[in-house]
Image (cartoon, rainbow, N blue to C red; front, side, top):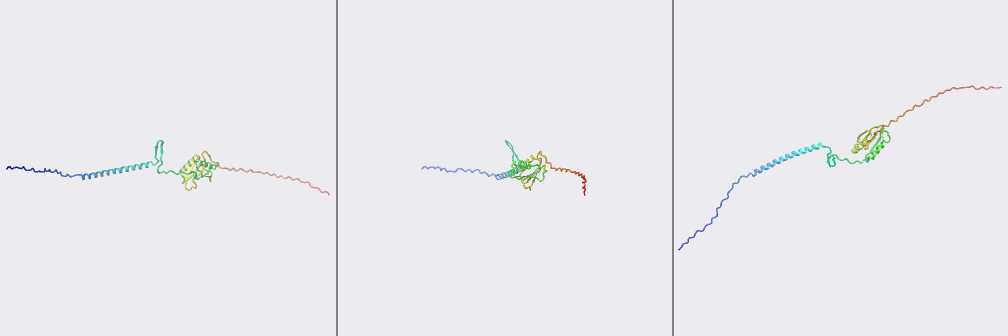
Amino acid sequence: MDETVQSPEPTYQPPAVVPAPTYAPTPQNGPKKGKKTVGLLFVVLAIILILGGVFYFLGKKGSSEDLEASPTPQERFTETGPTTEPSPSESPEAEVDKAKVKIMIQNGTGIAKEASYLSDKLKVLGYGDIDSSNAEKQDYTATTVTFSSKLASSVVSELTKELEKVYQDVNTTKSSSLTVDVKIITGLRKGATAKPAATTAASASPTATSKASATPSSTPSPTPTATN
């Protein structure tokens, strides 16, 4: 009887597992580097702040010096030429109604119609409230002007210039107790001379000489004879 030899069945063997290489963790310097970076940023920021403060201080000091050196109105050049801008500290003066400015004119020269003459000239300039009279004295040679301390500077300047055109000498003062806005005592106009003082010449009275020559002559009258 034939014996059949059976070959053993092949057994499955799984492939050998090769272990993966293991790497030992190396120490990282991340946290230390981060701290150094933050510290460097703080240093740079501090330097920037210091430099900014220095530049700001220098710029502020330079601007203050410029303001102190140039208090006058600044000039702005345009195509038509330089134009002057008013300083911010200067406020424009309110417009004055010259018709309401009270002016008293007194003739101080003794020359007739001097107060009326000046009154007419001021009316041409727009002044309407004017009172004319004679001064207590009539020997003024210089024109005396008293302005109220409350009067606008534009009116003071205009009247002073007008009076200096007309009169030989003009003296101006200011008063806080003036009852009017302007008081003017006229002096001599340019080219005029003082009025001579009136003189009274006493005429000598004639001496009358009376010569009385009384030489009476008496002639005896004839006596009548009585007749018996």
